[in-house]
Length: 315
Image (cartoon, rainbow, N blue to C red; front, side, top):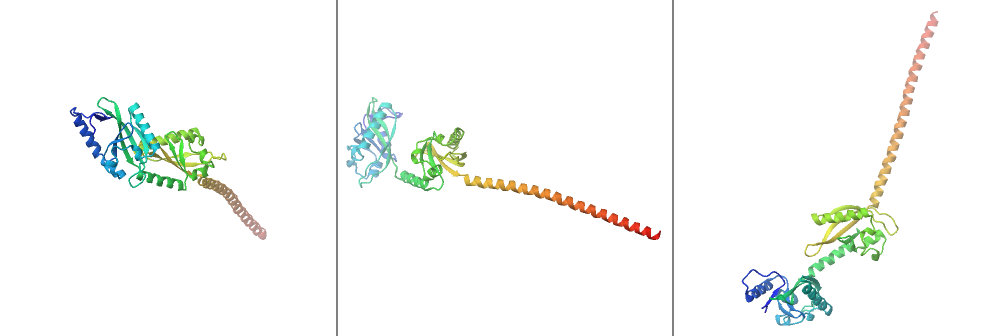
């Protein structure tokens, strides 16, 4: 079935027998864990492995020699043919999103990685398509989206340049902006240039080290209020583990800073009271010392007076 055709990948370092190369390709495709199919340039399926039939629930004869348009929508068929044209012209691979319909009429979200299929002369004669079942990942994403949306803290997702891709209601409530005034906007619209650099530096750090990072941001709200916040940033990665952005969690620090301010004011007031008490104590102690000295002086005068009286009695 695969005679005289080779994938758009480095050739195997085996004897240059066409039948052997074809057999190697058949074995690789058949035993691959992901669903893999081969189509011609018009999208007709020429070959598929067992994982394809397992994914779609069709028999071999219901898939082979059928057009992809039987399983996907007209728009997705056009998308696949456009992707195929692109990989042929550029000699690269291309990712696309397909939602094939199964034998049980279930629509399965998948990602397609397409590469050109060439004959022994290097002429493109079709495509090799590798599908990835995205149902579990989409569920995880939906759960993550739900958690983000309903989280009490403001949470946003940005790309690697700091453009905001999504945000939950708590962000709009914090800043006082509408969604259309936040989404697709750069963080630099809401924070200072220095803080924008700090955010991008934090993002670079979490990408390189695979950890989270805390930073201080002071975004300006729609009412022009500067809001003190702390940012906890972590890397956002695609299914292949490639970093594509960041998830940022903000914490409104206004109440905390108000407490700190109140404590500082209370501390200042307490220090003033302590100084007043020390001054009062100095005054009180001074008076007591004066009273003691006065009492001693009175006692001395009394003794002298008594002594004088005794002398006058004998004279």
